Image 1 (tube, rainbow, N blue to C red):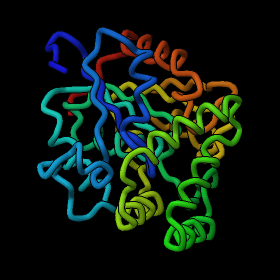
Image 2: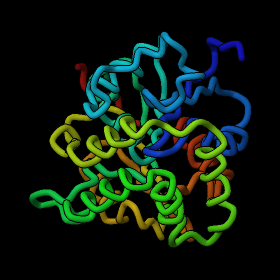
Image 3: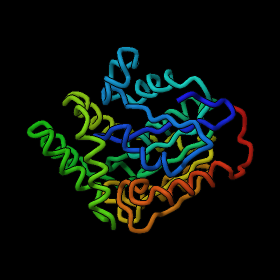
Length: 265
């Protein structure tokens, strides 16, 4: 689709063990008035990215991922990140603050692992069990992870179908890519950069999210200087699939909302 220079640019970033097509229902609900592009995280869609997809040497390093993705976007944009994609969006906004104008973060946390003074997260032992199960049976683990993402979801059957369709109707990422993504989730801690973020941010979270506790998303919104938190009742880890029209309305309203001019960087 030809880009309209008069329209805002929305760039979508998917989560671990997902695919860029997971955003199609949300993009349809957002509708006209925007240039929309969903990027594949490096290694997730070699057919779409092609040989010039700028896949970084280290896919377990958030800075390398940000550099690879930012090189594919030649204009300023609003980043819409989900789960791991939300972490990448935060790091991208901090590294390239003039390129990223606003953030929409869904199922988001600055760190997925329990850390010092950060308990609303996954323990190291659970993450290690997850990694072991991935090596033993990648496809089985991905199916169980899909089920986990729909836990607490009022529309679980529909959302699970969309999650499975986005992932299993395309070539699965290699085990190396999935393991690197787990390492990224295990090691990335963005808490220190949050107070320095200049972009207005919209935090959208499902009330029943079983992957990222709602306390983590609330803490994230409190630490960001210009953030608004919205809870989607009855949604799990993928609120944009649970209620695409409601989330689309929130995003459109947020993009027209006025915020104070940030200090120069």
